[in-house]
Length: 75
Image 1 (tube, rainbow, N blue to C red):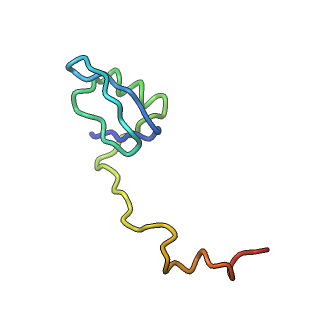
Image 2: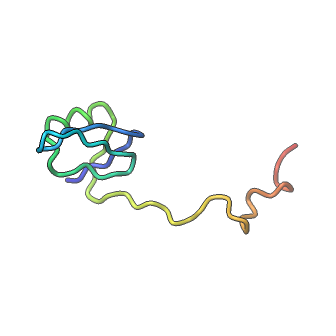
Image 3: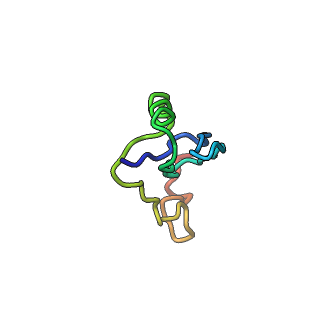
C-alpha cells in the first residue's frame, strides 16, 4: 500500500538514517519504517491509498475563465 503526504511538510527517517522532508502530495518512500508510517497516519499527516493522487492539469482563473468576471460578482 502506498501512502501520500497530506500535511504541508513532514520529516521522516529513511533506512539510511537521514531525515527526508516530504511535501504535500508526495508519496512516502518505501524505506520509511512501519512505525513512522503508523505515527504519521495516526496524526493525520499521511493517508493510505492504492494509487498516488493525480494532480489536476486544469489551471484556476485562466484568462478565458468566465467564472471570475466582474458581472457575476455581488456588490
